[in-house]
Amino acid sequence: NAGVTQTPKFRVLKTGQSMTLLCAQDMNHEYMYWYRQDPGMGLRLIHYSVGEGTTAKGEVPDGYNVSRLKKQNFLLGLESAAPSQTSVYFCASRLTVDSLYGYTFGSGTRLTVV
Amino acid sequence: SQQGEEDPQALSIQEGENATMNCSYKTSINNLQWYRQNSGRGLVHLILIRSNEREKHSGRLRVTLDTSKKSSSLLITASRAADTASYFCATDAGGTSYGKLTFGQGTILTVHP
Image (cartoon, rainbow over all chains, first blue to last red; front, side):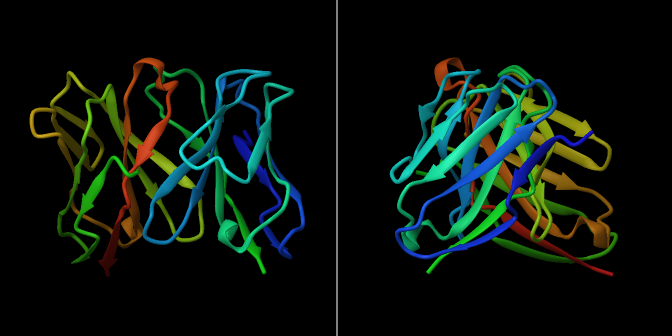
């Protein structure tokens, strides 16, 4: 029971480089979310998806793009990384919006942009 | 913008003592959830309380919700060193929010053996 798997776990990028963070879940969850966590600011929603082929903007979407071509995968892309995108990124999934079990989180990707 | 504000920001207690963390929020909710995050790890769901519930228990956890005051509390009884972690409240507005959660800034709990 892998749950939610995020790759990579760590990455260092130079300003202007691009990368894709992968989130994969094996629980057949409909809803998937990308959050970033910064010290003293809790978690902030970047983008989310309510099902295969759908995506929507969250609270802090600028500088990020997402895709959900397959139900089990939710990709987060940074086209031109900036130091302000240094953060820990968490992916989460949820079976339904009425689920009593809340989110299942991945273990995170620690990204540093220099 | 942060929906939940947590208090205290940090809490240090001895093993065996009870730990109480509080969360206040600003807008109406469908449910409120609590999560635990161990250092360097992802968040783990602890408990969900719906807006029409006032109290809920799960093992050593007790959660209360007062929608008139827009506040919730998490009580951990008989704390253990393994309870050392950050604890976050998160609110779900329901409706067309599609299960999106808005997280508070968290309470750092340290339980000394």
